[in-house]
Image (tube, rainbow, N blue to C red; front, top):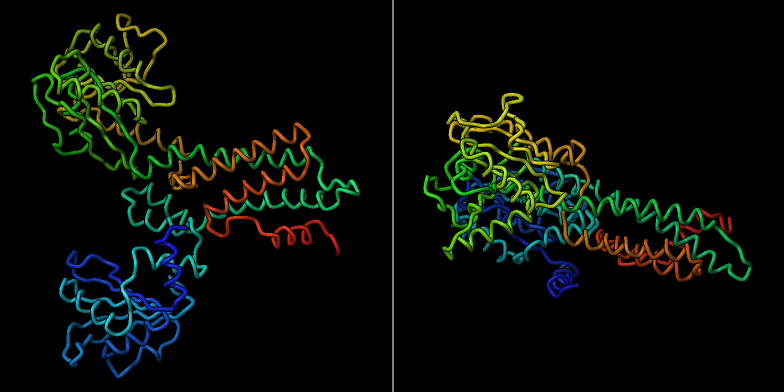
Length: 488
């Protein structure tokens, strides 16, 4: 546990009251100041003259009360609305006050000063959520989801974060943890009754349970790559020869001019990145320098960065000039495709169809196939015909990007996914210990060594939830008595 977290826990244990702005001052008509702790209701009564002579301390449950915040000398500062939520039904699990005032930098600063003069202290970053975690209002995975909800830039990222915050993700992890606890309990029983040579679970059953649990752990680990890009934006690289219209296509996908467009080759000398929301999914479109031989040091550096971007992208779109020489297009497509990996989505975008010189055979309005003299052997990429300049065919390309991502998530971008690197590492660690368990079962290793790996797997999953770094003796005993009827 870091010093910062330790200090926050110590502050929480000291039973003090904290205050902080919940909104950015000056960003709108209203601002919110949040107070949490045992003296929050008392501070509200000392700061605010409530209409009708009411008192926050006289309220029960949840209440909304208007009033006026006053300076120390009794003069008015601002007319406010105060929400009062008594423990344990608040966000933090403590008495909690929220003061809604006008969003003036001066007003917010003065209310914060008055709160601290009345006995509150300034909250550390994230301390309200830390208190919610420490008071059992949420587990660690849910607490981490709070920041993801606030930072979500698309519908899909919001859905994933909301699923995690509402506990669906945690429930999945607890189910895994319970399975492992059951396995550990059976092994502990065998260790305790080793002299009687009692076997509480056949090795085949243990292997089956461990195998199914490992399969689920691997499935969650496998979701990290996609979950992470849905959270931060799905990277789509526009690659291809110089002057093929990549920058024009970028502007068409974004709906505004972001990249400089010119007929001069080598205009784009570095990667240009911008985001766009398509169908509730955030995409990061990356325009790259044209792939060609160049002696210009700056342009060569841009081409190197283009190659790096291609390797790390989820989608690679090879943009070609449909009016150019077919053989040049063929070579460009093969060159770009050779830089991609099998797990990347690759497509060809034949641009500039508005010039009317395409040597391609149309299949339908926007998707085409190569005719014989552009044969690409076994490489048969999906091909789109567009006019980036006139935005013809761009919507079909956008729809393909959207539907491909949704198909990879089973059609539901709010499903349970791993988006946190810490969680991914913990699950990977749990998977390695479960693989050891399966290997040990095949080798006939003793129950005590099997139990050690199971405990380590449980520790790893528990570290995600933050509900203890190890399965406790009480939990094992609870499993023994409730599920295996010892001493009934």
